[in-house]
Length: 276
Length: 276
Image 1: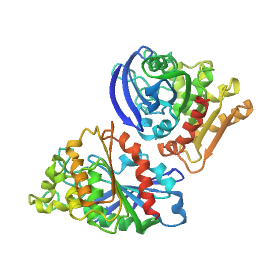
Image 2: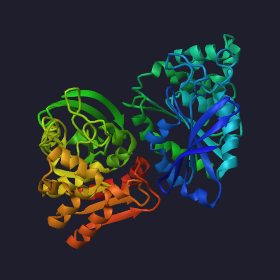
Image 3: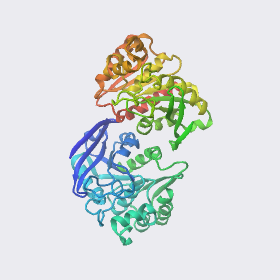
Image 4: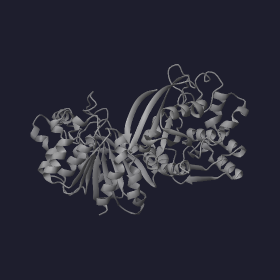
């Protein structure tokens, strides 16, 4: 593992690291914020999964999360959103291929050799960071934005016991029923929709739900709201009697101005359960 | 004036606007954050001047200032750092020309026709924003980073009564004695160093000082600290018996991870004096 940068930040350290990923069969880069408390022993960690077109860097520089994570004494991990590099398949569209891994293990060509973001986020990267940094593997929570909100919710519901709490900012909530989803799930997983169900937060919520608390924020003026389909997830949460807070925020759009506005709420929410 | 974007942000609004500048003889773009309180009447404003290579956008997206400005009910203005455009002179170096206006009125060719950032920040932009937005012209303070810290300090000391308080993050503190300064002052103002003095914070501090409180933060591990020369300004502040807090922050570098870490302190400092 190679250190690309380390900057002092809110009393802790914001690092960027590169490593060879077995899951993705290429080099992968991630950001990790460690609070000051990490100098004295393992700290809880909040995963932040980013959206379409993002790298590890967007949320790390624009979400303002470190201020609140430092206050709560928790680490933040910012993974990339897909495999990358010259030998890695790509597409001209912004919403397929590099920058658009959708947090699945691709079974279809040309994606299958590298696009295994599910295994990368669920298995490889957690093992790597708990081995190399003072991270407590028993205290993990997860959040994300847009495609990353989809990733956070589907990982949380598919891995019971892994995360203490889950939240999302403007998540893609029903990808099997929207253009942000059907295109990618078809490309990565093939046309048998039975293989898509475990990657749809609304279907999972109806089926299994989440064993802990859920927090979801979506801007009521989100310019992509018809692609996100928050109404499907809201209905599923109510049907499941899932412990959850679901908020529609008037005037807010899909940008990081929206994400940063509600970041304090999300970090505080997770910290409460990470430290419980 | 043209609205390029407006995003809901921390209960207020982050806007980006473009206008034709008489001072710079070209179109100029700036960011303006208005807190929720601006809906009810004029609010105080904190100017944030950016550093070399920056546009209006860097601090607007990476400094995390809106969170604290919203809490304090004050506006933030993020001007660009130079004139820009095809007809505007430029240089291949990152530290001269576009992105490096140094907050002076250039008298030398080829810069004189457009590089009048002093007049732009001191006169034209204040008039524009107080005419078009609910900004209280009697409640202004100023801060900045690196070259922008130089701008903030020199404007504050040259315009007594204009700003209630001044602060800076890692300011270029003694440009007449450093490579970040001598090159640019020579290019923009010519070789007569008598014309440089009003653009050197350390010289100004020795000579006139500032009529209000001063806050300065510099990272003790700043990779550019030999170019910034904080020791000259510190000495001048002590000699002048200037009301000031000067802090060297161990471990911090020149990045926005440093700026964002101490932004809450700076916004709170200014708010105290803006609301007094």
